[in-house]
Image (cartoon, rainbow, N blue to C red):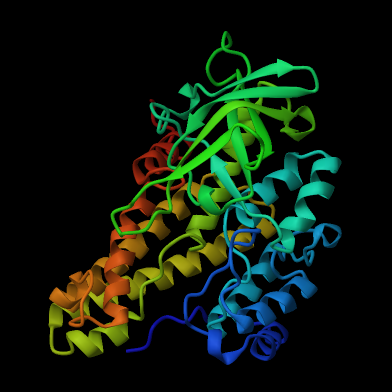
Length: 390
């Protein structure tokens, strides 16, 4: 049994992309699940990855859909998908990942001022600065519009006080894009603004805390009289909710493409090693592999629909929900086939792949919530597609 490799009959690979990736991506980083989010606090994962990253920066392939003047390659959506297919075919890691290129950059391209684009986008494309997302607060998660972090008018700046929680990667980020309340008397969705500022600004404190998989990816961020220039207000004052919703669409689209999902190993390889004679395991592998193939084809149909003028406004919610649930099912199947070997935490009785699978499986639980829980996505589809009442 072979794993689905991203090729679908009738949608051929663009051989120029494939040839370029084959030439540019060093053998030693292929298929290893490496990633690089950029920024001043993150180390490049090795010299070979650095060569791959540099080649992609030169071609604009770190952010291939962005205009060339901001560091991209100016590719349309179909060609971006072909480039990504070539990378998957070769096993090349994404050259740049994280919140900056996939979420904030796309939002600034659409809603930012020219000054904001010129100042922020080129450094993002080159991986010089990393960003984190300041949305959730204690008491304002699913009901995000109830956020209470304040931004008060102070001349050419806003004075920000409050806190954020579940802020992924804030301990290694350089900047934050942040939702704040600028009009406490307005209806809760209408008094919110969207700000950008450096985490090195006086008054910012970052604390990370332990996660179920042993990592420390989530953080709390505290703001005490943080002065933020009004030049880094995105959109209009008190209209940040519109900016936030647009960014969430980009986030869900990124999650649906697997940008932030923990990747499990090859299901057929795990089956062969741990459960070659188990018919129920074979059945689970076939079902997940078929669903992954169907999902990939559906994504490509959506690309073609957009090229033909379709809007597909609900597909980011549908794709986010499906992709995170599919990847969760895949990791569940891997741990199930490994049995006790898939539940190790440390010790000589487990190899590195088994220990990594345990942590990926635990981490995957959070991806059913990240970017909007599956329940929230089903509500969006129910209202916008099926027309069901609240």
